[in-house]
Amino acid sequence: MRIRLAPLFFVLISACGIAQGDPLGTETPSAADTSQGYIHEGESIGNVRQVYDGALFPDEQIRTFRNIHRLFPTRIVAAGGEPYPLPIAKEPLKNFQFASRGKTWDLYDYFSLNRVGGVLVVNADEVVFERYFFGNSPKTQWMSMSVVKSMVATLVGAAIHDGHIESIDDPLTRYLPQFAGSAYDGVTVRHLLQMASGVAWNETYTDPASDRRAMLEAQISQQPGAILDLMGSLSRAAEPGSRWNYSTGETQVVGALVAAATDMPVADYLSQTIWQPFGMESDATWWLDSPDGLEIGGSGLSATLRDYARFGIYMLNEGLINDEETLPPGWVEAATSVKQIEGEPVEYGYMWWPLDDGAYSAIGIFGQFVYVHPASRTVIAMWGAQPKPVGTDVIDEYDFFNAIVRELQGPQSTRMHAHDSIRFSE
Image (cartoon, rainbow, N blue to C red; front, side):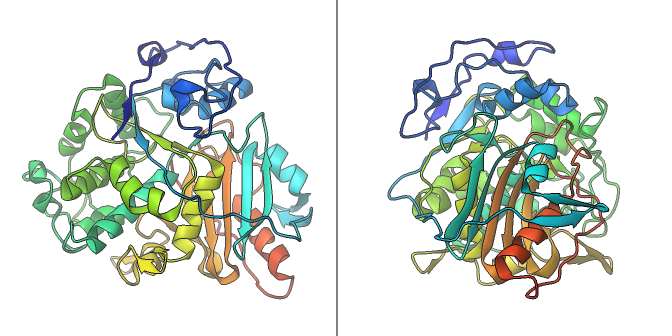
């Protein structure tokens, strides 16, 4: 287990603080070894409140998104061994046109207007497109935001497979008895994964009075257990399993569940079960709620684009590593499919977003994606730097993903339509 304290942390959490430094201008074999030569380490960055407010100028935002390890203490998700191969396809993806929101666009439009920081497309186990923007590179690490929610939920599946959690229908209090008597008393692991606990929560990122911002302030305080104390103080809005409500706080509880059940830090369990065995090529970093504390379950993992893509391939392969299962049978299908809550369909699985034609995605605010389309064996990893947390995408991302799949398969092979529903994700 490796922990690193952000050297400029106490400057960065101030309302207007900007960290300064000299660019190191060097690369190292592991981009996560940021204190020893990360290529972007010396860049000036903003602070975490400015991130969630959407109050950073474009150049500041880019620098901050690829340096979020400097905002809080972090724990290393260690890579190791031979990287999972990503061979280059002989026939790369070329420019194409597609329709979205009543207009016709092409690749150049999408990358420019949606402020894409990097994109990697894998089809049939080969890289058909890889491009970086704004000075990013394969060595760059970029924030996940809610993409990491899907990873944490997947670790629950791994913990069930490994025997650390007996059943998805176990009560939460079996593993976290401190929630007995709270609104989470009677909530099961399944309820948590579906964000159907019935616990009241306001997710509005830019509202300083929201529960989401209260969670951020608890994170900024760096007091051990402050976020879980916040979660335990919440009231019940509905019976467990009767209502879906998107909650980043819920993911912090899931992270605490994984840590308690496995008796190890969540970053270490991710490294042990997926990051190292599957063959991620670089260490990642992950925010902590306090020095040597609990990982932030809903955001704060920072990794290379290729390793985000590899995680998508891991899901595409249904958790198989060297022909060995690491997830319960049927877990990926269950985790990525539409659920019924009180007889109504909810387009949310176990912290994955089901999409059209059997596709699904991990999604984060500002335009972070790990998109998987099993039928065509396509994975798309994408970084974004949109101006505000939600609602500032010019071109619909799902129209773009669908168009890539059509282009790779041929115009007659699939007919998909982007959902009009709003997706709230961090």
